[in-house]
Every structure is written in structure tokens, then in C-alpha cells.
Amino acid sequence: MLKLRSKIIVLLLISFASTQCNQSCTNSVKSSKIEIKRFEVDFYSTDTLDFLNGLEDLADEYSSFYPVFVEQVLAITEDYRQFSSYANQLYSYRIHPSMLGLYDSIQFHYPTVQSLETEFGAALGRYYHYFPEASPLEVVTFFSEFGNKAILYKGGIGISLDMFLGTQYPYYKGIQLPNFIIKNLTKEQILPNAMRVLAEDYVSELPQNATLLDAMIMEGKRLYFAEQMLPNTPEYRIIEYTKDHYAWCEENEFNIWSSFIEGNLLYNTKFTEYRRYIEEGPTTLGMPPESPGKIGIWLGWQIVKTYMDRNKSTSLEDLIEMNDSQELLQKSKYKPKV
Image 1 (cartoon, helix red, strand yellow):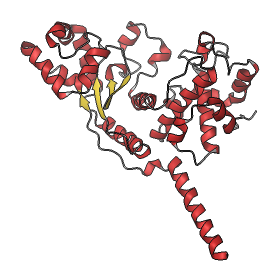
Image 2 (cartoon, one colour; image 1 turned 60 degrees about the vertical axis):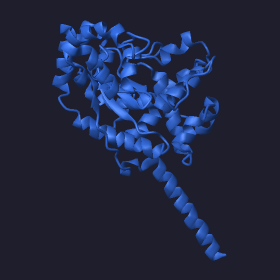
Image 3 (cartoon, helix red, strand yellow; image 1 turned 90 degrees about the vertical axis):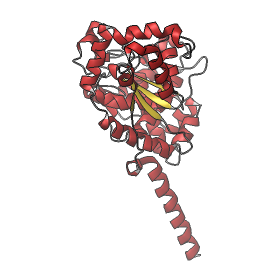
Image 4 (tube, rainbow, N blue to C red; image 1 turned 30 degrees about the vertical axis):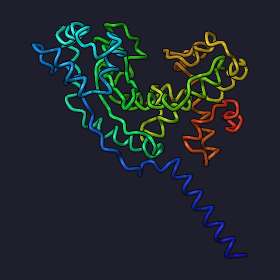
């Protein structure tokens, strides 16, 4: 009986250690080798005297990304193969002084992307660890004329470098971007944006008549996903807060939760009413002016993290597949301290 009991204890310890490593030992996961492809460099290297053939070469070189770029990012054609029908529009991009100036700014801030390759290699190494069946992803940099930060397409992640030129880049104010947006247009935010976009491919969209709680948990899952891919990134960067805003949320967690409960907000199904709690903004309407925006998303993240802390055997895939936000809330036993 003693030997049997010893074996059971050993097996339980092994199981516990394995579960703990699944949740917290990703720093030891092997990085993936990533060579970032620079679409903007190749685009501005095309021969203006033979531009049409240059576009065809780009389409061959970037067979997955190029169709998305012209059909969705720029939205100048419905069929990328009809090169002659939109070549003049792209040619205008190629030679326009403002676009050439934007390209020069990108080159100034990102003459090389070696550090990004290292960071993406580490993050995608963890991604393949959590999702071993996932297909390899390419990483492509591009420009969107201040449209997109990051995009996910079949086979890869695209990073629009013109959206990460730093808080002092003068044209951000010129196109009237608010300060709460500009503060996050930095190199440090490239990986968090990319991992949140990648999370969108796994965490399902909201159903019809979704409640505020549904929206909070969905976004909380995406932040938790990004957190697992970027374990060495500060939490305030993952959600795009300042240090002070994140600290304010931590200090006022009980009051935030109490205001949601007392206001009967969690089960509101009217998006027009609850959107203020999950959308970007300098602050959250209805909260003290010191609060950051999208405070409902921050709160949803805390609920998800509490659930995962209480349910150590739950894998990231298990979490993603949970579609009942009420069940997750109940099993999290979320109750912030006063």
C-alpha cells in the first residue's frame, strides 16, 4: 500500500509540475527564427520606368501579402491580378513627395529590423509552443498611410511601420490624432499590437445581443493571449496604458468592480450604452477623470487572469474555447479586495 501511495504522489507531482510549466515556464521555450520581409523597401525600390513589371514582381515575391495590401489595406482594386487597372494609383504613391517623405521617416527610424526579428522570434516561438499545429507565420512590414497598426492575413502578420514612428513624429498631430493615441505609436508597442491581432484569430467575435460582460471577457482573453506570448513585456504596454493609468486601475480595482455591480452594467445588451467602457479614449465616461479609457477591457482581463490562477489545469486553448462568459466569471470567483 505504501508503494502504491508513493507512486500516486509522484504522478500527482509530475502532473502538477507539468501544468505549472504550461502556464509559467514559457521563458525556456525555444525562439523561432524569423526573417522579417520589408515590403515598403521593395516597393520603393521598384523601377519607375518599368513600374508595371515591378508590381508583378512584387506580387510574386509577396504572394500572400500583396493581394491583401492592394485589395484591403489600400482598397484600390477588387482583383490584384488586374495590374494595369490600378498601376497609376500605386505609381502616384510611389512618386508623391509626401509618401516619399513618409518612407524616408520609416527608413530613419527603422534602418534595420534585427531587434524586431529577435522579439518576434521569441513571441512566435511561444505561439508555436502553445499551438503546435499552427502553420508557420511570416512577418512583413509595410506602410498604410496612417491606417493600420497591424493586420493578420492568411500566412502572416503585417506591421505598418508608419504607425510606430514615435510620439514626436510631427505628422501625427498634423492628421489630428489625439494624444491618447499618439502615446502608443512607438516601437515598444509593435509586439503587443501584433500579438493582440493574432489573438483575434483565436478568440471568437461577439454573438448577437452580447452583454458588456461578454465583451469584457472576449477582450480579456485576447489580452491574456498576448500576455502569454510576451511574458517579459509590462502589462501596461500590453493594454496600451501608461504606467500611471495602470497603477490607478490596480489601486482602484475594488471601486471599479463595485461601480459595475452597483450600476447593473455587466448584463446590459445595448452596445450604444456600454461601448464607453470598452472603447479607446482619454478616460472612461462615468469614471473619475483620472481613469484610463476602455476600463471594462482591463477589468475583463483581471477576471480572466483570476480564472486562470484558480484553474491551473486550464490550457490556453481551453480558455479560448470557453464561450460562456458567465460561467467563466463564476468559476473565477473574482472578488477584488477593498
